[in-house]
Length: 312
Image 1 (cartoon, rainbow, N blue to C red):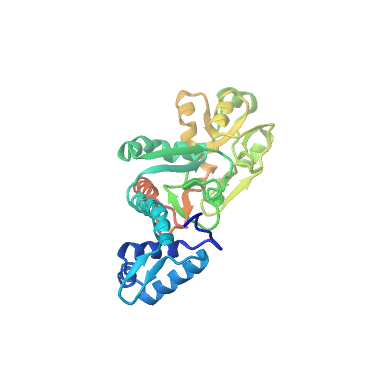
Image 2: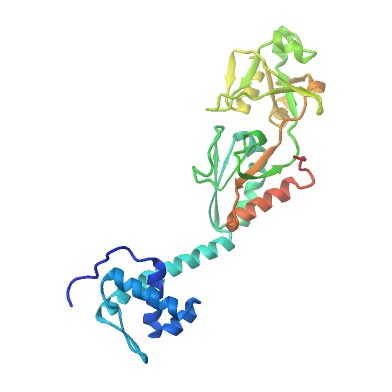
């Protein structure tokens, strides 16, 4: 015998697995029982495989089955590859059930500060086999196309066809300005007064969308299109600009707390401010999530709900 096996068309993995089982058992019935198919199905599969390869793989009679030289050559080269496939499949199964591997999360800086930073130290200590890879990006990202496991965004920014888990309560908002700015330009008493002021606006990177200035009540909120000649992309820089006396800033209160506590900025229009939209943890629908994502979703639910979840 010379040369190598020539393939007319690529055989299926199912056919190769069936061939290896028959070769190992030297028996069609035993191979069929192992693979949970009928002996007839096994026989047809092997016949089709032989036709594809254009060789006889087994010499068979009513009493015995034996490999031909071509069959022996094929099983010698095929068995290690099937073993590696089996090990890989087993490893994937174990990975699904045990928290390990890289968990990739996409989030904005605001969401990171509100929800990730408070839990990340304890989370990475609890799951040392999970590499916690957090990407902070204020641009909206296709988490599936970019191969992220999950994302955290405001509700209106969550991609369609996602499982969305609300995180905590709605965010408290506040309008702030430096004492120097208020001394020079006066203190606004109503939202309408903002039209006579310089407002520092926040623009979500790459999206063209601005952070809304929302006032009114929970039942009747409204948004205002304020004016100003300074636009920034991160809330922390908006607070810093307000502290520098460059105008009024509308931010989540927790981002302004340090500057409020030090007196660098003062709150205005407090009774007119309404809570901001809630954030959501979201991820693609999966019939069986890997353990690394399961434990993260559970951790976030335990930390930020469910009693505090707003109703959708």
